[in-house]
Amino acid sequence: MSDRRRLLVMRHAHAEPGHLGRADHERSLSPFGASTAEARAGLVAELAPTDVLCSSALRTVQTLQALQLADGVRVAVEDGIYEASAQTLINRLATVPPDARTVLVVGHLPAVGHLVEGLMGEPFVHAFQPAAIAVLDIDCAWAEIVADCARLSAFHD
Image (cartoon, rainbow, N blue to C red):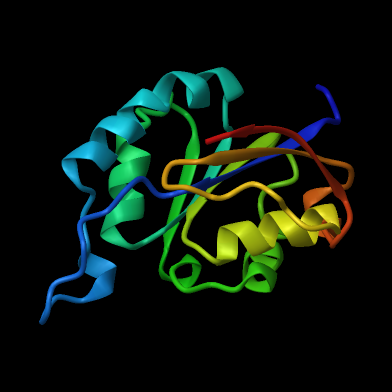
């Protein structure tokens, strides 16, 4: 088994605007967002995540469902990823199973951008548009993940 670890950081696809009286957590994908998320399925299949950490917000769960992940991918949909800080995400990544080779995080702005910046230890110059995916090579074990331990290998916007 390779020692290489990879982190895929994805912002949810385009969501419907908020509505008075409806919680932000319950916003769904727009039709455009649903089709964009479906279009990402091939790329994500090529990147082959073994594990997923996904916000429990409806739009992130719908984004994840549209990706049609392979059987056997370990998926955790968690309330703590909704409104998480970058440090909260780093702390959560430190608890993924040691045998996880490629972890996909499906989350929200600003946390996904701050996560990438923090792990690279430098400014992230790309705009994290809906359904964008940053691919990071991780140079440490998940349990040891800290700032400055990743390199950006690709960005798909």
